Image: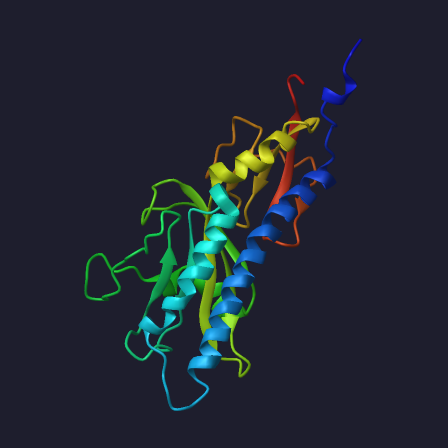
Length: 243
């Protein structure tokens, strides 16, 4: 007699979309927690003007950020805040970005250095800054930390006056996204890929479309399913060869 409890329930494209949305929502909940910690800290520091916060005043954010890193486990390999130009009194640019091992990420912020890390030109910073909305960039290789494919999630952080303080963000390894989503994708009756707004594959069950590859040669006969919570879409790309 067959044990029907061990037979996986076949997914629909809608249920796959729900799974991706749930994962993204978990990321953004953590970023909201970090962003709220920054605005609360900022309000306290600027309660008596004309005091201008300095980078060292952000030290108390460490506990909140490390708490979210621990909470999310392997889903995050780095998280923190990245400050807007000129909001701090002592540094024109500053990251307060932490790794799961408890170490703070140190990058070159000197524009005259050949190793200058100019985050002000990166989509994960410019979209929240210029459009006031959350964003995710990737998959891209994380040269600054792990040399693995990650997606960088970010939300804008502003105070009541509307001043943009910076972003709260997290790097989510593609391997962690696969660990969560791929088992569900494999119960779908078709091969399917998850694609970003630039047409690059994040994950999928079609070996012809690997992480980071372009989908310009993809058969578009099946309608794609856009996701509301992130600028991604799901693309069925043909029947599976076996179940």
